[in-house]
Structures are given as structure tokens and as C-alpha cells.
Image 1 (cartoon, rainbow, N blue to C red):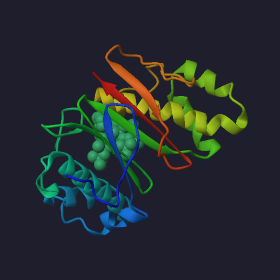
Image 2: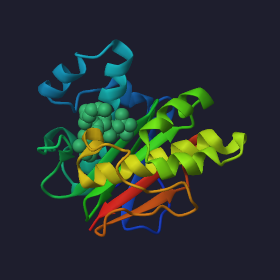
Image 3: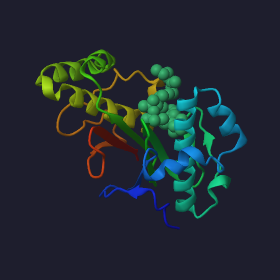
Length: 214
Ligand SMILES: CC(C)(COP(=O)(O)OP(=O)(O)OC[C@H]1O[C@@H](n2cnc3c(N)ncnc32)[C@H](O)[C@@H]1OP(=O)(O)O)[C@@H](O)C(=O)NCCC(=O)NCCS
């Protein structure tokens, strides 16, 4: 089944389908039409303030449509469950979701996958968040020219979150434990996991990474 026409499939040579939805533009309908969500999902969103609720709901609407097209099923009938670590799962495919502001990125793959997209932050935000990273990563980031620092930080952060989402721990595992690095290629701290930067089709001002747990 084809993906929704307001979604963009990103080019990649990796073994994954990558779908980007901009819910501030072509995919804005996903913020208004939550008819595919379950009662439980609607109730969950009500816990947040209005903007956060709309953003979370739109992400889940996009996910349901992506999985529905992938599996050839009604988006409203897709069974999404949380595993013991809190990662949303489906019995018939592996997927990962990340949101940045109103962008939603979804990966569907054969192997367990973790995905992260982040907007490049202000320098002072990056300086503070950098303290959560591995000490070698902090040293590498401190050595960068000022102009490259915020993007450099968020690249390491996106690689780390993708890795932790592929492991399924998310941030329940301290992001400072594993060295992934700020170099041109991510280092994988785990023999079963490979980590990649995503470039093609990622909107300006954003950084994304993906990891596979094979
Ligand atoms: C998952 C997590 C890494 C999200 O990071 P984020 O940059 O804020 O948000 P993203 O949009 O990139 O990702 C959110 C998605 O990650 C997925 N996710 C949640 N827990 C996950 C886990 N343990 N493993 C993999 N993916 C997970 C979900 O699909 C979630 O989207 P949803 O809320 O629509 O279901 C982080 O919030 C987390 O680990 N939370 C669980 C552990 C926790 O709460 N620790 C204390 C916080 S410091």
C-alpha cells in the first residue's frame, strides 16, 4: 500500500524505510484528524498541555498511517504495545519514531531500530546538555570551533539516542556511559548495534541518526 501523499519517503541505502512528515506543512491534517487514535491514546495525550498533546497525537497519527501502509492494515486497527522498557512495538515489524518540533520521522525495518531527529539547539543549551555525554565526547566537542559546536553536540546526541532506542532502554540508560563519539563516523559501543548518521532529506537545521540492533 502506498504511503500517504503528504509524507516523504527519504532516500537511503540502509535496510530501512524512512518516512518524514511535516505536520506544520503538508501533513498538518495529522494535527487535526486524530480519528485513527485509540481511546487510550487520546486519554494519554490529555495529560499534556495543548501544544504538547497536539504534537504527541500528530506523531502517533503519522505512525499509525505509516505502519498501516507498510502492513496493509487499517491504521486505526494497528496494535501498538509498549515493551517492558517503554518502547512502542508491533508484533509484525520493527519501527522507531522521533519528533522534533512539528517534524515526525518514522523508521520501519526488519531489525530492531532506533531513530532520532533533533533541531540544532542554541549554544548555551548545547553546552549544558553536553554534560550528560561521555567524557571523551565532551573533550571532542570542546575542541571544535565555536561555529561547529552546537551542530557537533546534537550529532553526538542524536547518535546516542538512536543507539539507546535501538537497545530499547531509551534514556533509562545513562547517555554518558557509552562512547559513540563526535568523529566523522559513529563508533558503536555494542557488537550487535551499528549506528549511522542520516543526511539525505533531513531538513536544514536538523540532525538525525539511526541505529540497528542486529
Ligand atoms: C525515548 C526517549 C529517548 C525520547 O527522546 P525524545 O528526544 O524526547 O523524543 P523522540 O521524539 O526522539 O522519541 C520519542 C519516541 O521514542 C519512543 N520510545 C519511548 N521509549 C523508548 C524506549 N525505551 N526505547 C526506544 N524508543 C522509545 C517512542 O516511540 C516515543 O514516541 P511516542 O511517545 O510517540 O510513543 C526518552 O524520552 C526516554 O528514554 N524515555 C524513557 C525513559 C525515561 O523516561 N527516562 C528518564 C528521562 S531522563
